[in-house]
Length: 179
Image 1 (tube, one colour):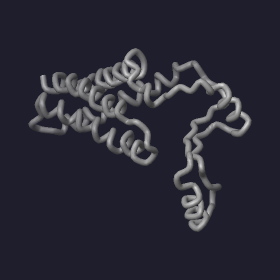
Image 2 (cartoon, rainbow, N blue to C red):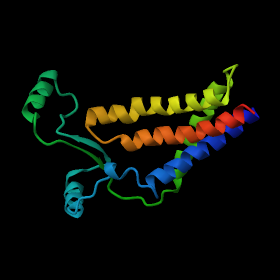
Image 3 (tube, rainbow, N blue to C red):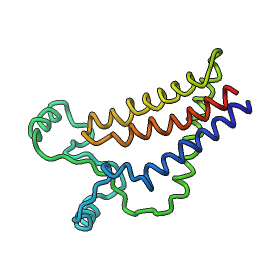
């Protein structure tokens, strides 16, 4: 139980630390957060258009649209501009709760990985390390990369995060779980 708890908590903290570096000082996610000098005009316009917070995909169809309407819209919009907008009426700069939630999620993910790794009878540093990186790559392929495929967005920072964060966690777990 100690191996599971300590392994998961420290592993989650290592993942969280990498995420801090990746999004903060290293700014690897800059391609996913591009700047436009027209941001004030755009935000002002959006605030007049959207009545509630949400994720908007444009062009879109109202809920309940028929398959025929969908086909016509696909044809009419082919080759035209499209956008995704995450809209919020108010920017909350208090990141405390978001950081807590992120850390808890990372610890839970590391705990789940520890639980799986502790079931391997012939475990070793190498198996733990490679399995941890595999978990990161699986996560990337089914989330970050899948999003990149469908919405044509850059995902290289997500791949780097998946490999580095889970390699850090795997290095720790390889040592901790196999000593």
